[in-house]
Every structure is written in structure tokens, then in C-alpha cells.
Image (cartoon, rainbow, N blue to C red; front, side, top):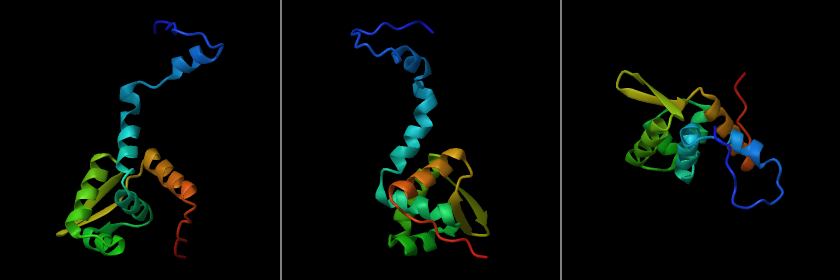
Length: 123
């Protein structure tokens, strides 16, 4: 990589090291997309719910007090960003959080920033 010379020297000697590790647009695109999707309060609540259980659209709609079409729209966006996955059982689709490091980190970040406590697992 070509050494970049900055227009102003402010005496920050670690700028070169920071620039070496600056993520490229392609490297950070997935994180940006995921955070964009979670910028919507409804999607954030649905994502948090699916971090704790697998549910169908009708149950999600009842839990978050939204219409099924609105929930389906949010689920489609979350799925396209790779934050959730689905599976079909007969005619029913079930959704849950994707088993990825990004989804797990975002889940923990949401709970930390919001001072939200995870439900206790049964047993």
C-alpha cells in the first residue's frame, strides 16, 4: 500500500499505523448494513426477540404489537442483511438469529447499551 501523506501534520504519530489498519469499504459493508437495519426500533425489537427464541411471523407480530405484513417486511430486511435465518416446517416459516459472530456481538451490544437483561433459559 502506498504511503499516504496527510495535508496537515498535527503531531499524531500513530496516524500512519491507524491508516494501515483502516478497513476498506468492502470489508466494512456488512457491518454497516447490519447496523443500518438495527437503526429501526421495530427491527431492533424483532432482532432482540429472535436472539432468544425461534418464532413464526404471527407470534412475532403478536409479541411486538404489529401487523403480520409489517413484521414480514422487517424480517425480509433482517434476513437480507444476514442477521436472521429462517426454516420452513410445513406451511409455517420460523425465524431466529443467525449463528454468526456479528449477530452475537450485536445482541450483546444491544443488551449492554440498553441495560436489558436476557431472559433466563429454562432448566
